[in-house]
Image (spheres, rainbow, N blue to C red):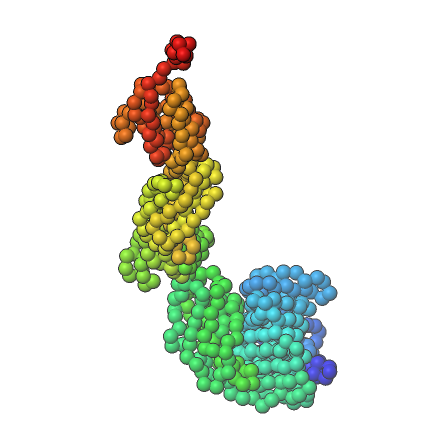
Length: 617
């Protein structure tokens, strides 16, 4: 529906016609003549006779002092009245006519015919030829139309088109009859003559809100014009005439707002405003640029991506049920949060550190000249405080006792002063249990390993193997402090460690060895009548030692070591003897002896000595 736009065009045409039909009044000074006045103010010097006729001047060369001379506006000189870009923040682009969009920079001049687009979180400030100040806010589209000055009269005519977004202005007093400031929108036309005002065109372009802080704005649509005075606002919907003006909400209170902010996020809380269903909060520069802009339901706001350190104003206003924004509260503050605290990396929140030497690390903070670290046993950093002032490094090793700890860091500025603290992080220093002190012994085919309890271990792990490179061939876990294992004879390698309740295991002990001796040989037999004496037995040892003694206690004995399960012993003198056998295992470790075997060795007579007796018989 294009009726609103058509009406805007008609309104603009009527505005121009009324200005042309009006007269500008010149107050004469001593020595003025009509020709001099014409030379200064008329676009065509030959038109001064028309001025003479309008004013019934008898003698053009002699004009009475302090006489008002009427000059038709259409006869006045018209000169360009360029707009100067005074500040730009964010992504702002413009184009002239059908040309491409280009970045808009501070100091640029607009002469009319330009279209300016401001991106999200972007804004641009302008100064008009009559010293009016204009701010185009984020996500807005503004086109510049007629920008004209009427010679040296001081009258300036400014025509703009707001096609989307928000506009704020402080317009100087517009001089009659041709001076004027007019903003066209798809919904309505706003005309003013010196005022502070705001225009907010909805995203769909179907709703316009006008808030007037000082002066009067005439809002016209659908054949109806309403005059909105300072402290009032109106709403115009597409296809509808403007609503009757209604009072704006007062400015929110400033109680409790900080004047100096030294840490981020940039956060403010203010008192709730009766009648406000929401609030607009902005961070504004001295140049009027809006760097932060948010609408919040609660009387508080927080920004993590704050602007650089410097002087700013927090601009607050309430929003009523119709969406009209009230009077602004500008609260000056200084942001001095840089350098920001470093971003802590390790230890992380709740982390357990398994050794007393704690390695702390963090990301470097821009502009930081060094760091201040604090460690404490309490989150308020009031007990057991340890403080370290460091150069611009990103890690530090600190030896701490076992228990719960908290740590935080602050960046140091160029003067060595610590700035805001990082959020503190809690961690626990709890070294893993030391290896238990254990000892191993072997007897009767069993290995027994015993140890003492250690630290936070709730159970213990054992690994055992027949070779040093296969020590984990047998694994055991137990909550007891001893183990008994039935093992075959041989040499074994083993180590132990403590295990906590959550399954975390400490380091292994030094590898130990234990040797299981061979079992006692059995079924020992001997042929005492032979020479040598033949002995045999059964067993599984790699070697054996055979003892022969003429005493039951084997106080002294003839010993022979063999690698088989039989042996030949030299025949001793006749008499009573005892014989025993024991296995010899790894590294010469001997096992238990067999049951002693009693032998009776008769006097030995060689067989050839018996031949004479046999021959006699």
